[in-house]
Amino acid sequence: MRILLVEDEPRIVADVATTLRSAGYVVEIADNGEDAWFLGDTEDYDLIVLDLGLPKLDGLAVLKRWRHAGRTMPVLVLTARGAWAERVEGIDAGADDYLPKPFRMEELIARVRALIRRSTGNASSLIEAGSLSLDVKQMRLARNGVPVSLSPLEYRLVAYLMHHKGRVVPPGELLEHLYGDDDARDPNALEAVVARLRKKIGATGTIETRRGFGYAIPDDAK
Image: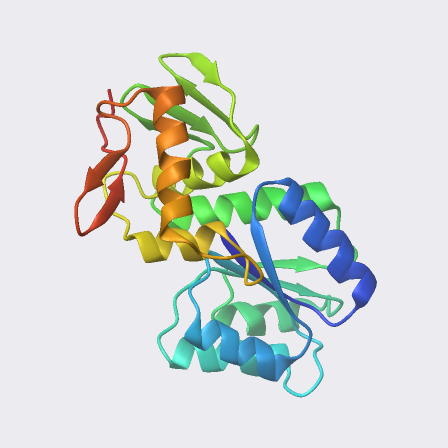
């Protein structure tokens, strides 16, 4: 899952980015409003964590531009502006949730998980598809109740497909959400990760390949 962190305070950037990456997310960073607006308008993110007090362009203006352009990704606002009227303004502008500073990282991660789940139509922390179950809180996958040991990359891949279960996900979309900007997005590497996952969770009826279209975990995965 791919997250854009928009924050200009280096200490907060380092702490939040480390926490998000430890929770299995790919994190990209923008430290000013203009870069944030451009990235959010041209790239696809599963969620954006947005500070309001930004240089060059205020976070609230960035959010309004995204929503005016029809961008619908979940946005979690982080800000030191704690007044209730400012919270209402942010939500009315299109924010999906609001977390005032200072905050605990545990609460940030819980809100991030909840927003991403809801945006993909999953109400619970436990996402199930037939024999497969993914506990996004514990970052654990099980098949028929038996835990499956996964590498961080394998987890990100299966988590994205489970969040979008029943939908064929094109390779390009998977690559965007599995790797950061500095990583090589190689379709052959993606095929290798899928092959390793199939060996661990079963080659038949779990991760399907639709030639020319992409990959999918069916709702009734076997």
